[in-house]
View (tube, protein in one colour):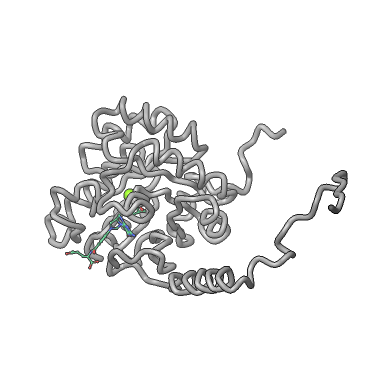
Amino acid sequence: MSIHMDKNRVTPVTLQKMKGKTPIVALTAYEKPMAEIIDPHVDMIIVGDSVGMVVYGQDSTLGVTLEMMINHGLAVTRGAAHACVIIDMPFGSYQESPQQAFRHASQVLIRTGAQAVKLEGGAEMLDTTRFLTQRGIPVMPHIGLMPQHVNQLGGFKTQARDAAAIEALVSLAKDFEQAGAFSILIEGTSELAARTVTAGVSIPVIGIGASPACDGQVLVTEDILGLFSDYTPKFAKRYIDLGPLIAKACAQYAQEVRTGEFPTLEHCFGLSKTTKVTAD
Ligand SMILES: Nc1nc(=O)c2c([nH]1)NC[C@@H]1CN(c3ccc(C(=O)N[C@@H](CCC(=O)O)C(=O)O)cc3)CN21
Ligand SMILES: CC(C)C(=O)C(=O)O
Ligand SMILES: [Mg+2]
C-alpha cells in the first residue's frame, strides 16, 4: 500500500496552481450516484448546505445540521475519485469560536475524507480561518451573498453593488488571503465586485452569480439539470430539463405494472439448485 496521497486527486494545492492558467470547474453534490457522474468532469465538488433546500425542501439553509453535512459528505467522497471535495460548515457549527469551528471542521474531515471546508463570513471569520489553517484544515471563505444571513438580508439579495461595498469586499478578500484561506467563494455580487476581488488576490476565486472573470465557476447541480424548481436564481443556467424525462420513465413503469407487462419471468428468480420440488 502506498503512503502517498492519491496522485490523481485534485487538492487545494492543485487548485491554487490553476489560478491565471485554466478555469476551475465546480459543481455541488449531496449523494454518491451524482458525485460519481460529475466527478470526471469537474475539478471541485462542493457538498453545499443548499442540501437543506434542494433535497429536504427547507426554505433556507439554516435547518442543516453537522450530522447532515457529514452524512452527505461521506456519500459524496465515496463517489468522487478525482475532484477536490469541499464541505460546507452548516449554520451554528463554526460561528461561536475558532475552537468550536476546529472541533467541528476536524470531525467533518475525519469522518468524510474530504479535503477542505467552506464557511460563510466577513471579517469576524478571519481569526477562525487563521486558526483552522494553522492546524491543517484548508479553508474556503464564502463571501458576498451569504445564505446563512438570510434573516438579516430579507431574502437572497445581490450584494456589493456600490463603490464602498465593493472596496470593503476586496479588502475582506485580501484579509482572508492573509489569514491563510486557500481559495475564496464569492456569491451573488455585482459583476464588478467579483471581478475586482478576483484581480485583488492571488488565491483562486470561485464565483456563483458573480463574474466570468472569476478563476472558476460553481453552480448547484440540480439547477443545471432541471431537478430543482422551487425558484430559479438568474445565474442558474439550465442545461437539461430532466424532470419530464424522469416523469416519462415512471409513467411507463406504472403503466406496465398496471397492464401486467412488467415484470416478466426474465425479472424473476428460479429455484436454488439443491431444491427438490415434488409435483403434487
Ligand atoms: N438550488 C439552489 N441553487 C442555489 O444557487 C442556491 C440554493 N439552492 N440554496 C442556497 C443558495 C441560495 N441561493 C440563491 C437563491 C435565490 C436567489 C435569487 O433569486 N436571487 C435573485 C436576485 C435577488 C435580488 O438581488 O433582489 C435573482 O433574480 O437571481 C439567489 C441566490 C443560491 N444558493
Ligand atoms: C454556493 C454553493 C456552492 C453553496 O454554498 C451551497 O451549495 O450551499
Ligand atoms: Mg452553502
